[in-house]
Length: 352
Ligand SMILES: [Cu+2]
Image 1 (spheres, rainbow, N blue to C red):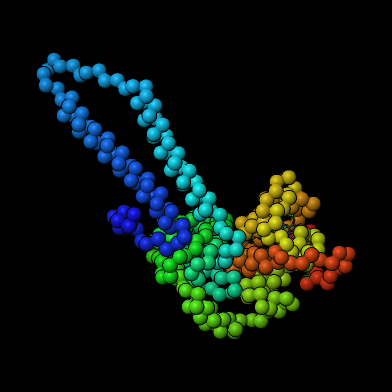
Image 2 (image 1 turned 180 degrees about the vertical axis):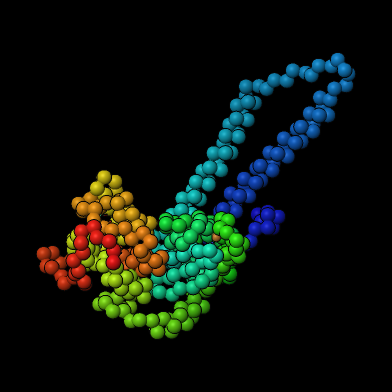
């Protein structure tokens, strides 16, 4: 396996899925090489064995037995199906992030990667993550299609303008792993590089503390309950106020013009057309950008579209806020709680 990795010039596999991906990769290459060697050897042998010796010589009639044919068909089909079974299981692993993964928001643009962490930290081109923790990236592009590729982790995902895609990995070895953009995206495409820095737990804690000192200078949380939850959540509350989301949505579980955000994240939502969808990051962002696409059952379509109106950072903050409310306690029934900011918004009015 190690030799094959060297021949193919692959970097060491630093993520939990890397070894199984390499194993399938090696298996496919091994079988293909073996089969092509067999085909070429047979061709060479036939060339010698059935070489025409006289001008009027006719080739012998060669027939295969039924059993031989069945064996070959079953063998080839079986091999392909085996690849598929292994590959499908890996695909499910790669596509399905663990539910406790830490989320990092990725904003790609010509020609850099911007990372926003749940606690309010941001960084350019360098993604710092702890060792042995699943990390889920929620990614969007500001301009053209990019592709987030970390060869050392054996993961790659297109990053599209106007649509959120996700990718997850868990590093199993500390170190730095190069990030490449794997989709030609303009003049400096080849310079669109970054790196993932994987730190051991104590080093990561030190890195976080250094960042906290810097974040201490950030504006304090203005809303009750936001303090101590991490700054992106506080930021989300500020954005929800500023953008008047709270004119229609509550954070405390009460129904208003729109559905409440409490316990929304990860729940199953029934839509007007009968579909049931899970409220994940992609659904939430789509709800903001294309509110007409998934209208929640029991509500009128009156939410304005925020496409182009919200920056990627604001969207990340809003999603993080909604995520922080997933375990919010049920509201005391029948008692109207004071709401954050009740501002009358014209029906279907444009966002301020
Ligand atoms: Cu790119």
